[in-house]
Image 1 (tube, helix red, strand yellow):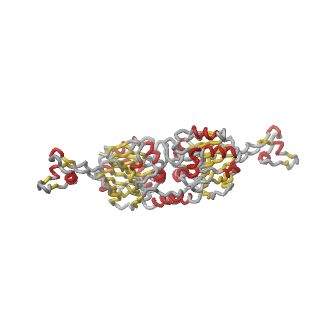
Image 2 (spheres, chains in turn purple, orange):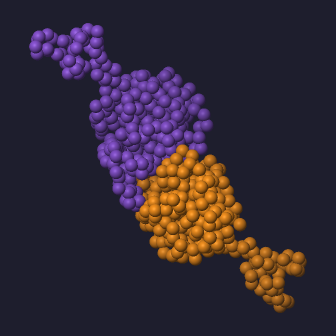
Image 3 (cartoon, one colour):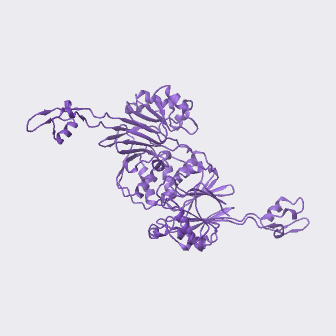
Length: 302
Length: 302
């Protein structure tokens, strides 16, 4: 599980920042989380194989989180994409896309499977072989939802040296699934517990943007390996954060501490801040393992 | 009259190109023509005072010509803009914007005066003191319209040395408007024709993108000081140009020659072309004063 940061800016456009866009890679597959204006160009610049994006999650309908989506989906079509896309988003998103496709007489060559996210707590939005995506209800001026992406535990690893030669392939698969095997001829029992060990442990990434300080999410994101949390303001502007339903760096850190995540990434800083140093200092008052999300950087989720 | 090129790419996104966006400046005022994804960032990079953009023209509803509009208009609002915008565009554009404003609970602080362009030939879309904008009907897969921007002739210049001392200010203004002045006391007649000379001659810019080869526009763009014309293909792909309703470099040059424009700028090259050299060579077969539009460059319209 790896996170590539494509854009970490906030609503006011800035020359040296891009609006929100994050790419999570699981094996050879990508999940795109939020898609601010220009995201398709960031993907090009970072030489990302866009055909591997199978899932797109949109947190909310403020432009800095989704204005790049229509361009990306249109370009997929132009390039002849055939593979379906699962698109998770709030009420209204599909209508916004469809009205623009219709205006251009665009007929999609690929299936756009829309998964309506009504922001109900803990709801599984997508369950796939390698991962699942659950919603994290957030508090913002429009419906806003975070995403909890859980990589599932890998297959059990076979202790090959403990197996007889020419051990049948179908038996391997059963053992890897954790099931005992009985040889129908010899009635010998091969115990999964003895002959295999646990697969790669599951990893969890939590995405929380945009939101006011909302401790109710703590039980949902508990123990995540990496949490991205918005930190639009510093604590001296806590009132402004409350009014605009954003968070301060300290509040993001308090969520990280209470939920015992392993690492915290901050972003979505108001354009009034020219440096992120104070955000990091402030967050460290409450939570030590914190970094600023940097555009173009790739974070291993461990 | 000056033209700043912000984006000159075509539909397929490219790392080193931006989608269509052109900024025309008349005195201290800007007209933005087309607004592909990312245009607001190009305006920032070029340090353009966006408060001076009073008019926006959208040629057609293919994404590479308008996906940046919602972001720009939203950012105007975020920055507290109060000045109205005249937005010229085809049927459907306002609905696309409004559905997105509604999804974000955005109430505009400024007036967005939408001027519906139904693509009727020679129609004056906007008539202002310093310029007028007329439509150029184009031929494309969706309704597409070019824009003819005519800077009006400047006020007549006063020959100050021919006027008596203490000549009253209101009399000046009348003379500049080309009207004779009679002094009510002395009944002396001051003839505008003798005391003034012609003001700055009018300049004309013609914008023609996207379109199939369409010689019917020749009488409309005739004599323009500068014409931008799309040249998606080279002549060996003329059939493909016809099928997709785009033009070749030669066709653009033939329009320029027939309409006796002073200068031709080409752009909107298909992403298959890595250099524009052949487009220029091909265009010069028919029209000598041709250049490739370069992003970031500013062209004096003379």
